[in-house]
Image (tube, rainbow, N blue to C red; front, side, top):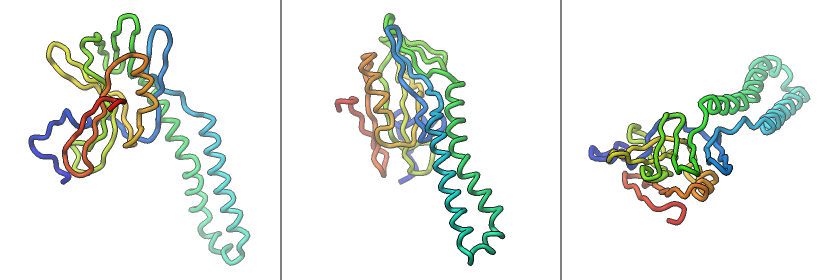
Length: 216
């Protein structure tokens, strides 16, 4: 059942905003004054090693082909194509990862918790909330109501209630269904004392379960 029922509660499913990828661009910063979710700089060492490994594999493949005499004639015909595909597959992934991190850094910090005032600021949204306006952090893995596919994704959102108006604020997205934000969220909860919930839906269907995180 891919199509949601007409009375589905959209607030119990992911917001569906932003790009869902496998890159972990967010990291936790903490000092005596604030706790922040900041963009992480590009992993330059990993990118260099990754590129060298791919280039070595491709170079080894080319060397092997040129040593097989019966394929030399065929190789001469396909050489430009193979060279193009090999080069693209070697440099494209590092470039994408670099751009994803650069974009995250350009947009800046997602979340700031002030230890003294206990206020939460969302720099990307330009909003600041007092402690009594914070409902919880929402760690949610569900389908997207606005999509007809059964693909499930994960978000980290902040839920607030100001003057009786309950609202969700999107922070992070991921294609991972398990442990997408555990490494980030657990220390964030310990440092801030903010409550958090884990929400998951059924693989097929539109039932959503909610439990305290990480205890539930």
